[in-house]
Length: 223
Image (cartoon, rainbow, N blue to C red):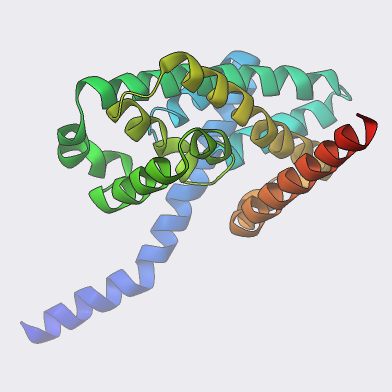
């Protein structure tokens, strides 16, 4: 029996990474095919789902949209993709807001594991929201992981829905635009962003902060 356990563990240790890689590639290929088929509407739907806690990474969707813009030589498509994604983020976030408002914590306790969100993750985002309020909503839209969860505690604590929608919409634009533009700039190598997503996420956040600081200084010097 002990030998059988050792064999099973050895099998899992050897082949699980291959299965995970295969599933990951299949998932990415499916997403890409979906966006190729439905275009801007596909971007809208997938980004709506992402904001409803469905584990669909924007690091796949938006860089591929940028690659599509590069492929067609259309910088306008960068703008259209960003708008479609941002509207999707807004709608999905509002849905999650109302889930938090109407269903509360029991929803995460019961179903969170299906969305890869546990009570620990929710508690961290809650604390962040309670500490920073509106800033957490705006800047949270540009932070990996936080951006997909923040809407739930905002609804849970009954934050003003109009302010939430404005902060969500404006906060989603820089993230979506940065990822789309990165896909446009990398062209046929857009999937490198996915391979190095942990570094890419940090780079995008830093770039957004630097851009905000530069804009602020320019506006301040001009006034």
